Image (cartoon, rainbow, N blue to C red; front, side, top):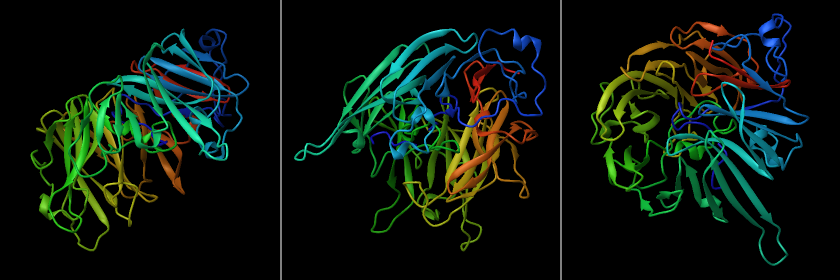
Amino acid sequence: MGFTKRAAVVPAAALAVLLSGCGGKSDPSSAPEQSAAAKAKGSGPVYNGGRLPGLARDAAWSAPKGDGSAAVIAVGESFAVVTGPSKAGPPSDEKRPFAEREGAKKVEFRDARSGTVRQTVNVDDGQVYASTWHGRPALRVESSTHTASDGLTAAKRTVVSDVYGADGKKLGRVDFGEHSMSQRLADGWVFRDDRAVGPAEGGAEHKLDGAGDVWRMQGPAGTGRDGVPESQLLSAGGYGFTWEEGQAGPFAHPKRLIVSELGSGKKAWTSQDAQRPDGAAPEDKADSQTYARPVTVVGDKLVVAWLMPKKDSLSSELSWVMGVHDIKTGRLLATGPAVTAQRVGFDTDRAGGDPFLHTVTDPATGLVAVSGQALGYSDRTTVFDVNTGKQVWTQDKDESELSPVAAGNGVLFGYTGQTAGEFHDPLAVDIKTKKVLAEKLDEDQVPVFSTDGHGAVALDDGIFVFPKG
């Protein structure tokens, strides 16, 4: 489809990972008895589980999931509670979280603090995702219409995306018609396969400079299954990313990063113009096609991974040094730590056979967690301060690899297991100290965070929202 079914980044502060209410346990045998304060809160389901890291012991409010399935998505200072029948859709829906499946759904936009319903949207048949709209947290509902073949004409599928703000009011609509395979929606911009970009509200299009596809930023572990479509990683802060080869000739060469203003299509700067951080390899000495890649955007800062020289020409290990740049000018603001990953043949990164870098940002501390990932091989997570570039910690070689999936209120959640491309076995650590806060979590116990620090989970017993702990 036009929006490839792959969540999340984009800037980590703007998007949250979607959680489905399938298999979560809200009353483990070790859970303490429910407090009197929690019992007194409203008429929603009662939370009997243990305290979740970074959140208060008692839920601020809860909501029933009904007789079907449920999910919760953070949208700024609100949570979108998504409910509907549990029936599976087409075979392609089997492994998708509930909100990403086709079918009827009800979406309630609820105030993160009080649970008050701000707006209700009924979806006849659609898929629901976390999104952004020109930098604002948003929710996207993608609806499709199928027209069967009559024997002469081909079957048709048309797609419409409606985008809603935190208050449940519609921000915009994009009607892709039958052209969803060649168009993608990201942060209020429509990207076409020929690198033409235009505002989703309508207006002039601009063709971005470069030689190939629009380049995506990196995202959290689970991207592709957990509510952050790949299209969401195409732009942030009004800028998009493309590339050009650093040298002319018949062979593949290191790919130079181009940062362009989406409103004008003008090239703002390139990795050739920008100051390289200490430790980065010269462009003409790079032993990889992916020389400088966009990682994530935090406010007006763009984190770029710059390739470092290989210590051993026969090694499959690649290392990048994190450079923090002004997104408008490319000016180097800080130099971060090095991040290492194994290169195993060809991976999913479109610009070359290099590893993907999983990354999330904790808005409460300004700390960024990043780790390498390639064809089922994860590398250790490193955490650094996006304002200073200073490394806070990195994992020891004898520790289980941690793949970052979410962060909030000073807590980093990550997967410690991966089988056949599927992540599992999440735990939580203090993002400042690496201290393990919870080592045995169900996947549904990884919360999504509102902008004011409330955390929500969708469990078998219902939707539960907790204030900051």
